[in-house]
Length: 170
Image (cartoon, rainbow, N blue to C red; front, side):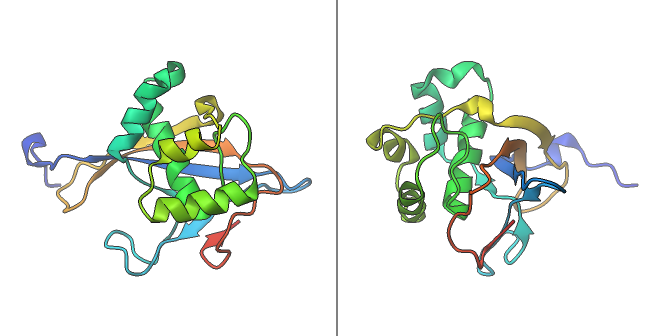
Protein backbone atom coordinates (compact mmCIF):
# COMPACT_ATOMS: atom_id res chain seq x y z
CA UNK A 1 0.00 0.00 0.00
CA UNK A 2 1.33 3.42 -0.97
CA UNK A 3 1.81 5.90 1.87
CA UNK A 4 1.08 9.56 1.27
CA UNK A 5 3.25 12.14 2.98
CA UNK A 6 1.07 14.61 4.95
CA UNK A 7 2.89 17.48 3.20
CA UNK A 8 1.65 16.18 -0.18
CA UNK A 9 -2.02 16.35 0.80
CA UNK A 10 -3.64 19.47 -0.64
CA UNK A 11 -5.47 21.85 1.69
CA UNK A 12 -9.13 20.97 2.08
CA UNK A 13 -12.06 23.32 1.64
CA UNK A 14 -14.51 23.37 4.57
CA UNK A 15 -17.91 21.95 3.62
CA UNK A 16 -21.08 20.70 5.29
CA UNK A 17 -23.81 18.21 4.47
CA UNK A 18 -27.25 17.77 6.01
CA UNK A 19 -28.92 14.37 6.21
CA UNK A 20 -32.58 15.37 6.58
CA UNK A 21 -35.28 12.88 7.46
CA UNK A 22 -39.00 13.06 8.11
CA UNK A 23 -41.22 10.61 9.90
CA UNK A 24 -44.17 9.35 7.87
CA UNK A 25 -46.06 7.46 10.57
CA UNK A 26 -45.61 3.69 10.55
CA UNK A 27 -42.62 2.27 8.74
CA UNK A 28 -39.25 3.77 7.88
CA UNK A 29 -38.54 7.51 7.75
CA UNK A 30 -37.99 9.35 4.48
CA UNK A 31 -34.48 10.65 3.81
CA UNK A 32 -33.85 13.69 1.59
CA UNK A 33 -31.58 13.42 -1.45
CA UNK A 34 -30.96 15.96 -4.21
CA UNK A 35 -29.69 15.41 -7.73
CA UNK A 36 -26.71 17.57 -8.62
CA UNK A 37 -26.76 19.28 -11.98
CA UNK A 38 -24.92 17.24 -14.61
CA UNK A 39 -22.94 20.41 -15.43
CA UNK A 40 -21.37 20.58 -11.95
CA UNK A 41 -17.60 20.09 -11.91
CA UNK A 42 -17.71 18.03 -8.72
CA UNK A 43 -20.01 14.96 -8.67
CA UNK A 44 -22.14 16.22 -11.57
CA UNK A 45 -25.40 14.27 -11.88
CA UNK A 46 -24.90 12.43 -8.58
CA UNK A 47 -27.76 11.85 -6.15
CA UNK A 48 -26.49 13.17 -2.81
CA UNK A 49 -27.50 14.66 0.52
CA UNK A 50 -27.74 18.47 0.27
CA UNK A 51 -24.49 20.20 1.09
CA UNK A 52 -21.51 22.03 -0.26
CA UNK A 53 -18.55 24.27 0.37
CA UNK A 54 -18.59 26.84 3.11
CA UNK A 55 -19.13 30.42 2.05
CA UNK A 56 -16.99 32.96 3.95
CA UNK A 57 -20.28 34.67 4.83
CA UNK A 58 -21.24 31.55 6.85
CA UNK A 59 -18.36 32.37 9.20
CA UNK A 60 -19.44 36.02 9.38
CA UNK A 61 -22.99 34.95 10.29
CA UNK A 62 -21.63 32.58 12.98
CA UNK A 63 -19.76 35.50 14.54
CA UNK A 64 -22.84 37.73 14.25
CA UNK A 65 -25.12 35.30 16.09
CA UNK A 66 -22.47 34.47 18.69
CA UNK A 67 -22.02 30.83 17.64
CA UNK A 68 -24.94 29.83 19.93
CA UNK A 69 -22.41 27.86 21.99
CA UNK A 70 -21.19 25.69 19.08
CA UNK A 71 -17.57 25.73 17.92
CA UNK A 72 -18.80 24.34 14.59
CA UNK A 73 -21.44 27.05 14.07
CA UNK A 74 -20.19 28.08 10.62
CA UNK A 75 -20.41 24.46 9.41
CA UNK A 76 -23.97 24.18 10.76
CA UNK A 77 -24.92 27.43 9.00
CA UNK A 78 -23.34 26.12 5.80
CA UNK A 79 -25.44 22.93 6.02
CA UNK A 80 -28.64 24.93 6.61
CA UNK A 81 -27.90 27.37 3.76
CA UNK A 82 -26.97 24.62 1.30
CA UNK A 83 -30.14 22.68 2.12
CA UNK A 84 -32.33 25.72 1.46
CA UNK A 85 -30.41 26.46 -1.75
CA UNK A 86 -30.48 22.91 -3.09
CA UNK A 87 -33.88 21.67 -1.94
CA UNK A 88 -36.04 24.64 -0.90
CA UNK A 89 -36.45 23.02 2.52
CA UNK A 90 -35.62 25.10 5.60
CA UNK A 91 -34.30 23.20 8.62
CA UNK A 92 -32.41 24.64 11.57
CA UNK A 93 -34.62 27.69 12.10
CA UNK A 94 -36.19 28.74 15.41
CA UNK A 95 -39.54 28.86 13.61
CA UNK A 96 -39.99 27.08 10.30
CA UNK A 97 -40.27 29.59 7.45
CA UNK A 98 -43.31 29.30 5.20
CA UNK A 99 -43.15 27.82 1.70
CA UNK A 100 -43.12 31.27 0.04
CA UNK A 101 -40.03 32.31 1.99
CA UNK A 102 -38.32 29.02 1.12
CA UNK A 103 -39.00 29.47 -2.61
CA UNK A 104 -37.87 33.11 -2.54
CA UNK A 105 -34.76 32.31 -0.51
CA UNK A 106 -33.82 29.40 -2.77
CA UNK A 107 -34.00 31.61 -5.87
CA UNK A 108 -32.11 34.41 -4.13
CA UNK A 109 -29.35 32.04 -3.00
CA UNK A 110 -29.02 30.72 -6.57
CA UNK A 111 -28.49 34.35 -7.60
CA UNK A 112 -25.74 34.82 -4.97
CA UNK A 113 -27.73 36.52 -2.20
CA UNK A 114 -26.35 36.78 1.32
CA UNK A 115 -28.05 34.16 3.54
CA UNK A 116 -27.62 36.38 6.60
CA UNK A 117 -29.54 39.20 4.92
CA UNK A 118 -32.33 36.83 3.83
CA UNK A 119 -32.71 35.69 7.43
CA UNK A 120 -32.56 39.10 9.09
CA UNK A 121 -34.78 40.82 6.49
CA UNK A 122 -37.53 38.30 7.20
CA UNK A 123 -37.19 38.41 11.00
CA UNK A 124 -36.13 34.75 11.16
CA UNK A 125 -33.45 33.27 13.40
CA UNK A 126 -31.44 30.09 13.32
CA UNK A 127 -31.54 27.26 15.86
CA UNK A 128 -28.20 25.52 15.38
CA UNK A 129 -29.12 22.91 18.01
CA UNK A 130 -31.60 21.42 15.50
CA UNK A 131 -28.61 19.87 13.70
CA UNK A 132 -27.00 16.85 15.31
CA UNK A 133 -23.37 16.09 14.39
CA UNK A 134 -23.13 12.74 12.60
CA UNK A 135 -19.74 12.38 10.92
CA UNK A 136 -16.61 14.24 9.87
CA UNK A 137 -14.91 13.24 6.64
CA UNK A 138 -11.61 14.59 5.35
CA UNK A 139 -9.97 12.29 2.80
CA UNK A 140 -6.20 12.08 2.81
CA UNK A 141 -5.46 11.68 -0.85
CA UNK A 142 -4.19 13.77 -3.72
CA UNK A 143 -7.13 15.10 -5.68
CA UNK A 144 -7.85 18.36 -7.37
CA UNK A 145 -10.75 19.05 -4.99
CA UNK A 146 -10.58 17.93 -1.37
CA UNK A 147 -13.28 18.81 1.14
CA UNK A 148 -13.21 18.74 4.93
CA UNK A 149 -16.88 17.90 5.43
CA UNK A 150 -19.00 17.87 8.56
CA UNK A 151 -22.21 15.83 8.34
CA UNK A 152 -25.30 16.67 10.38
CA UNK A 153 -28.71 15.06 10.86
CA UNK A 154 -31.96 17.01 11.26
CA UNK A 155 -35.64 16.14 11.38
CA UNK A 156 -37.96 17.78 8.85
CA UNK A 157 -41.66 18.35 9.38
CA UNK A 158 -43.97 15.72 7.85
CA UNK A 159 -45.23 18.28 5.31
CA UNK A 160 -41.75 19.42 4.20
CA UNK A 161 -41.68 19.20 0.44
CA UNK A 162 -39.48 21.91 -1.10
CA UNK A 163 -39.39 22.88 -4.76
CA UNK A 164 -38.01 21.24 -7.87
CA UNK A 165 -39.35 17.72 -7.28
CA UNK A 166 -37.45 16.48 -10.33
CA UNK A 167 -34.17 17.25 -8.51
CA UNK A 168 -35.23 16.37 -4.94
CA UNK A 169 -36.03 12.87 -3.72
CA UNK A 170 -37.58 11.82 -0.39
